[in-house]
Length: 320
Ligand code: SF4
Image (cartoon, rainbow, N blue to C red):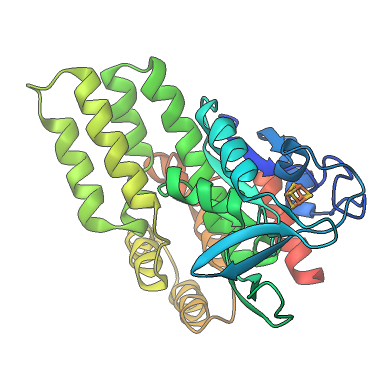
């Protein structure tokens, strides 16, 4: 059974941690609740961080004279400078981090589609803003996975996010204390997963490990940069299908024509968006066990994050 390194996640504190919203409420998120057992959270409330109380008058983003400000209309306070300073200090003091889960639509934490009011006295708003804290996260950690609790209800978004944070967490450990053979082992076990994200970068990563002249630390640095670059995008359906077909090739001589048709039908349904990737992965996992295919059994592509997160996420998505 694979052991997973715990990802370190910075999250908005009002999501499952404390009732610190402007109205003193807490936001529930099944993903965050379940992830608590498998990750290390570093929750933060930037609005409390700049000295606002709970409850408090709401704040909003206002675009005026070309600048976006964070204002509290009821008190007339301009919190822009305070929020930038707080965010800068908080993010500067972070040590390890593998990803971010922020509250959607918040003028502080929302990373997209936040209401922005045009003009100080104009009541009209457009959902084209980014919360000030979230903007600082994006500026400083553009290469790390960033999601909000609303988007994580979507199965594909959730699968990609979980895959990335658990992969980055494992590499973080190897990067700190791993040997050259640990790096080779990481690359070998993640080969299918890396190919599903980006074949070209995956090959460059393999090449960087085969350059025997380089010092271990510089190999780790180069490899780590390739990895975050590769994980900065999501895998395409066609790339996942290529990987699934490649794995299928390991068993195709052993399977009946009915089993082959069943697999290819499922692949077609996945391509058409009618079933999730997980269905095809589970089918291949069954054959991996049946034919005792050790090389594939070690591939993280078939279990990129803890099994319980896979089952729970699938059930919630069906119910949701
Ligand atoms: S969205 Fe951010 S600033 Fe607002 S209550 Fe939640 S953690 Fe605090």
